[in-house]
Length: 159
Image (cartoon, rainbow, N blue to C red; front, side, top):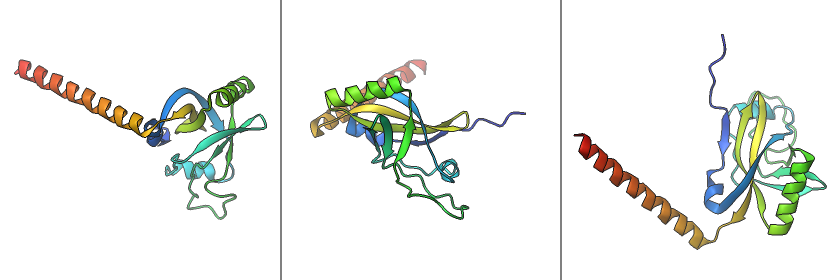
């Protein structure tokens, strides 16, 4: 009998969608050490404040918090150490070109398990100005209000 499939998502960076205009995204593997996988399975990781950089032809993830596994006797490195991301060479070159040409940044958006392996989704992002954020909030609120009005009208016709 198969195990019931649970939600493999460990952490989402919801703040990234508010702070940045997200563009193209990629799925990357993460090189983890020791008890970090068990720390991830405990489910308290945080992507807020995380970013990725291309250094010497490799992509490194900085500032992502993976908590220490409580049952571990020892834990190498810090909870916010830099971790190598695994991508194909062509993907790394494409990301590096776009970052250098357009002044974009690389942000992690989702951390999850896929087939028992930890994966992170990274996206190219451009920072939003404060007025962009206000416009996005206003548009979101307007669409919610329209949806509410439509649902009220549809409920009224069914009765």
